[in-house]
Amino acid sequence: VDDLNTALNAAICDGDLRKIVIDAFTRAKMIASNIDRARDEDGLAILEASKAVRHAQHDHVCQCK
Image: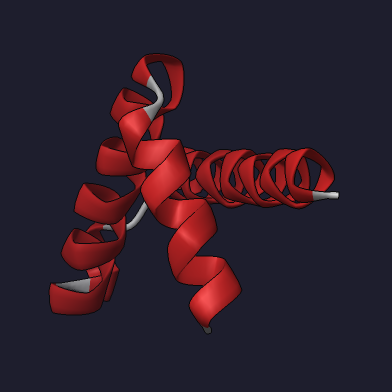
């Protein structure tokens, strides 16, 4: 969990990823509140943000070595 939090913070701080991550959280919150409003593009945005966070985590780990 700590590594994920670190990666998430890095992704949010990075200007390029900030919008992607915030958009994904917004879509996830909407899906959680009303699954009937969910669209395929919502899932793709969340997947894109997840990948961005994973890349940020990988970059963070590589920089620490």
